[in-house]
Image 1 (cartoon, rainbow, N blue to C red):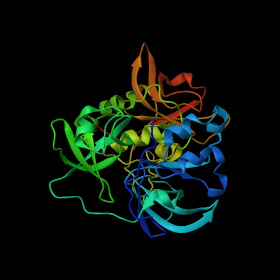
Image 2: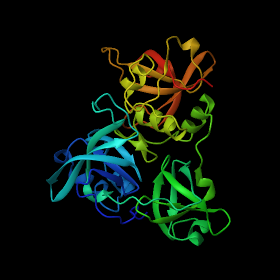
Image 3: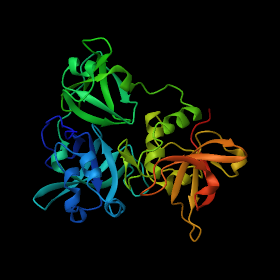
Image 4: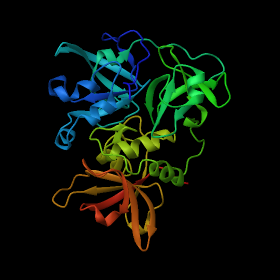
Length: 338
């Protein structure tokens, strides 16, 4: 597969507000911790699949990632740094609330290579509405003819689940036209994108999460190329129009009144007998008190409460009994009442 292309907008160059201009940007703890094996994740166009394929299991465990940011996501830049021949921007990623954000932006911090961002943001043409990628990943194409045919030919990039685009009907049946922040035009097969539902339910959460069964775990992952535990829960909710905290402990805390700026508030659920599909179940290690893992409750099967979760490096997203994780269940957060 070819690397996913960008829209070739103007580089960010430290502008205060910029937008992700590659299909997905890895957000790093610091430029100094980026390894040679990480090079494919720092390029423009980015090569996320090449990066993942090139890492050993131990290298995947040691990714110095904070989170990821999907194409078109707005970021606030507060400083820049030259490191390893690259200009890096320290950013706050919109739509990923965290208590670490003392300024109340509703955003998550980290470093992104400047070349993966653009300062350009053009107004979408009239007659568009927002849709989001509704599959784990979907191919965008340079022409409507290529989109209608599908396959590798004419591919302009592979975009993650929950990537949002202004769209309108395409020039061919079964094709939609999408627009990037920098004004680029892409074409998708119509079934690959969908509107955010007006009134999502817990059953919608479970159905969305099941699409990722078998996907390998990626620390810091918030894309359909790989999720960590709270990346999976957070992105499934985001795709349904509900913004929740980025990390496991704050997702749990949001059910107890500790809600970071930009996040929906939840309700605390204590016993497993009171769980409903879509609730976010939380766990601590046997020897600790902090919440370090979350999953999505699905149902009780043969007396066992079940969840979908992205467990750890080396294990894929799976559905399993809550009691089989080797961690201690501490409660759950309910963000949806339906």
